[in-house]
Length: 204
Image: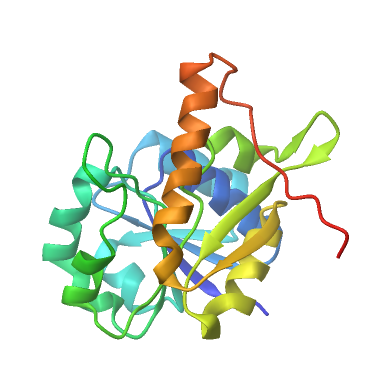
């Protein structure tokens, strides 16, 4: 299943995930305000398999959207482009640092009520997306979202090289965000560094 995926945010998170999706055969479109050296580097690395377009155009031509912008930038993005998310698979990797909640699912659904929002890629540092193997073990990526989006989301997580672990619908969004807080505590509070991850181990 090859998808057209718009990535909003071409920094470390968006760039690392986008690179892996390009390598897996997906068509990546970076939604940008203006070209810069970082985007040019992403395109050069993709060797013609990725594009950069104005945000509005990238959203129109995409099947799925990855929100990889700083959490504090989400409100302005939604005000400018939120209605274009309606009816699309939206992967929300933003974290509202310093706020009561890391996510803002309601803000997305207020402007795009038919968006299928998946909460993913917010529980690990970007280094784990670039290289998801730690100590010889594949890191797990925990996510939640609508059941009808599960299969597609699992494929996109796996295409980055992570073990996808579905927690449930968006009633489990706080569970996902609590795992993000665990990662922050380990990486920074316990000073274990950014290349730290969790892995699910089960008999089934």
